[in-house]
Length: 69
Figure 1 (cartoon, rainbow, N blue to C red):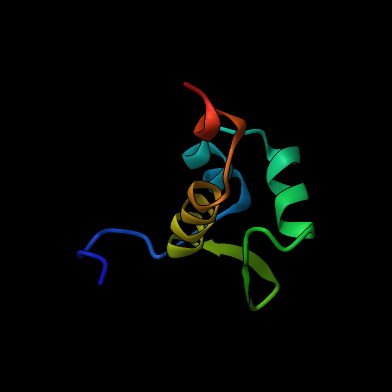
Figure 2: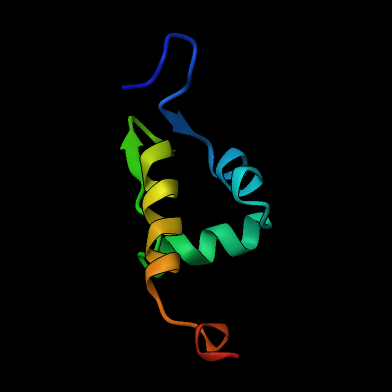
């Protein structure tokens, strides 16, 4: 559970900044379903746990570096 003062959802721009990627890349990840979002009223927000989920999924995928050495 988030601590008091910690935000549970972020704007698209804030989420992109958290991941260190551009806004356009963030929108592409959302469009392809790689990062889930919620709609609150007319606003689209990214739950912070969805960013964690995305990074965990990246770590679970084998990379060419996993076979090096």
